[in-house]
Every structure is written in C-alpha cells, then in structure tokens.
Length: 245
Image (cartoon, rainbow, N blue to C red; front, side, top):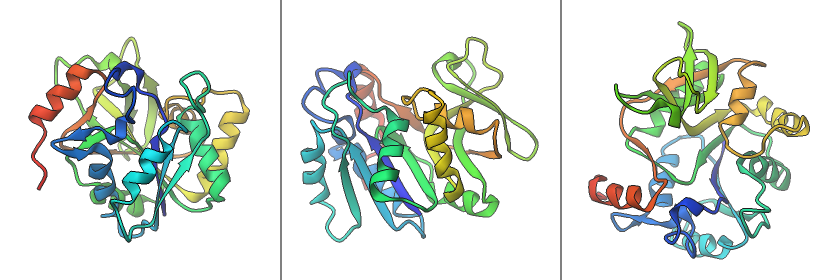
C-alpha cells in the first residue's frame, strides 16, 4: 500500500500563519502536524511508502522536513502550482501523483491538516478485513453544527447509502473526515471522475461520487479529530491537544 498526504493547499483562511509556512508544517505542542500524521501512518503494517504532495511555494520546506525523518521511505512531490488560483485541487493532486509515480497499488489518502487521537492501525485492520474502499467518520455530539461537515448514512453492513458535503438538512450525525482507503482497482476511477468534469477540489467529492458506483464502507472511529480552519482554532488546539509523548 502507498500512502498520500495532501498538503498542496494554501490555507488562506489561516493567514497570516500560513502565508509563509505550509499548514501541515505548523507546530502543535512543538511538533509539526505532519509528524503526528506520519507517525500514525507508519503503524499500518503493509504501508511501503509515504508521499507528500506539495505546491511549488512550499515544496522545499517539505524537503527540509523530510530530512528530519532519516531512513523512512518518504517522497515529496511538487505539483508545480504557485497560488490558490492555479491549484490542482485535492483530487487533481491525487491523479497527478498517481500518474507521476505510476501507482498501481492500494492507496491511503489523508489531508495534511488532519489531527486525530484514534489509532489508524485499527482503521487499516477494518479495511483489510472488508477489502472494500473505506472512509472514516465519527458520530458528532448533540448541538454540533452538522452543516459544516460531509455527512454520511450507512446500512446495517456499514455500506455508505448517502454522502453529502455540508448538507442544509443533515440525514445523520456521522461526520466524514478527510481520511480514505482505496483499493488498487479504484484508482482508475479517479481519472474517470475528473474526465467527467467533476470538481477537482475537496477530497470528499470523490467518495461522494464513488459510492453510487461501487461499495464504499464507513469506519466509525472514536476519539478526537479536528480541522484547524482559523488562527483562533489553531491557538485553541495548541492549548488543548495532548502533549507529545
């Protein structure tokens, strides 16, 4: 299995914090967000390589970060974009990496700003057990504004029956986060999705298209998972996140 960290966005909502630093490299309790993600990714036993896709502005910073992880098979890919205006989008970057590295393998994809406390290996075990494409979600507490999330519904077998980005009228309280397991035979469908003219942006748009065409399972995790969208949210997470062990 290959793993991809989506880190080519410009995080303009976090300005000025991300004006000169990639969001994935912002420190939480003194450690870059990316380190938390990569440490968890390496707990998946059959993960062979981690790919970081960056825009051109921050590619050198990710290369410098990679030097802090000696002995690990980590590749940084520069997608060549320089601003929010010419970005490829998350799904566009997925296809870019697949083409550039000629990936023909199971594919794990996660957003580079995903902070979480659950064990990724547990999700990997569920993926290997079911052998179906899989997305990750959790039940949101009562009172949460569900219109901010992608919301899923599932049947008794955990198969996705609906998936909608930021719905005006949410059908459940299952909020989907940007963490995905894709089977090897699903990868060609990413190009099909893009060739149809669908949005290359938010990574959740692809599984929302995919579940109507093949089985996509939902893994429900317990624990914290946060989206750092504003400077205030970043400051709050730095205060509340568990200390680095």
